[in-house]
Image (tube, rainbow, N blue to C red; front, side, top):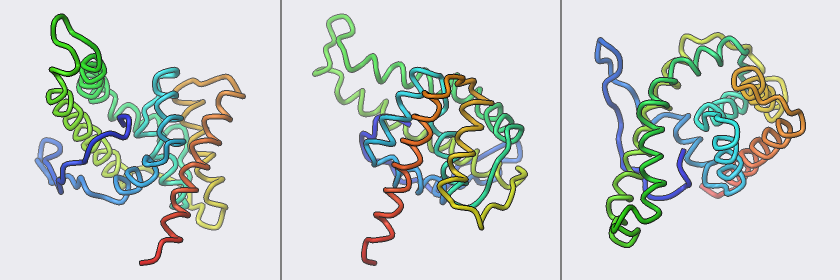
Length: 201
């Protein structure tokens, strides 16, 4: 995900796979991500983990979403999801992100004041690419095994999912760093979800 900037352009579906099945872009996982990513705590923690440890923010958010939904994922399933989106992350999202960040500074004679509109367009493209990746992950959950943990404390399930992803899939080995990322992300998500529950309909 990017730095929480700019509106999301509405989109409901796009094609997916060789059979061109519709891929739902507006799904519960995407709506969860928009909600919790509005938290500065969640956003900064995820982006820092992305930049320092090479983690995928969308997979961090997925670990939290399924955890708060009462589903526990294992390392094999998370590795499968990571491989599924690896090419898209490296070949599409990564280069777009690099261009967006580069445009925040002068590029030759073209300063940021000249390239603002272009940077906004690139930002929109990055958000759309993130949304497509999340839709692919959401679709993949249909065939991914997971353990029913609905009777467990939901924050705890989210912690377990996120720990497995960061430690076993992305190789974050420092226990203190791992705990800090997990706790800050999960508590930030929980706070945003509780705010939503408290809001009158």
